[in-house]
Length: 229
Image (cartoon, rainbow, N blue to C red; front, top):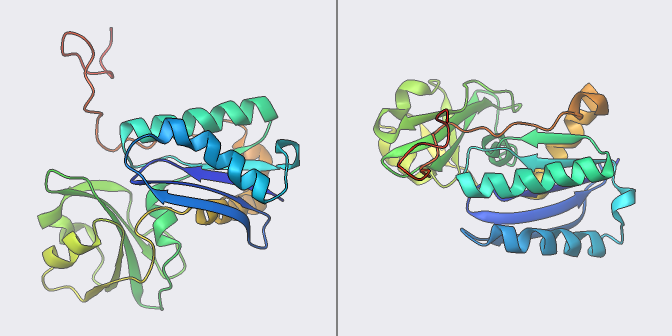
């Protein structure tokens, strides 16, 4: 099974094609803006490097958050459009589980994925050594993060790792040797695992974005986009 995956949710842009054995092609760059202009060229690049056409794909995967409001919209809109046009299943993967999946942990350790959410807060989730979630994705005050984490040896990953290491007094923790931003090849690998376990038909409905914090954008008149008209 061949999966095209991409991520624009946090502080990077990445795309990859994975065949279940490994990535056939991958592209990654740190980027905080311009995702809308650069995503499709990145997809075309990895498809060309993999010597594949869109008709060769069996499924798509995309990150669903937490992340920036604009970045999530770009990635999800592109993924939904491709899934509809190509009639392919679309798997959503959170950015937290994507960065946690690249950490090698031992029994008795927990992987803590964290993104700096600014304002003295972090997006946070803990996973066991096998990758199963120990907590729900959440937005917490960095200073209070310890109240939301298990009392295990902690491996910290993500852009919020350094903030947590400073805040987690009394915990045994250390930074993990893993990428701080989601990688599309990891998103594809997680998607392939779910497709194998649950089947393609479980992913015929496009995934919803994971918004933990309400968007900062305001409509004319100061109304929040989520308010009823």
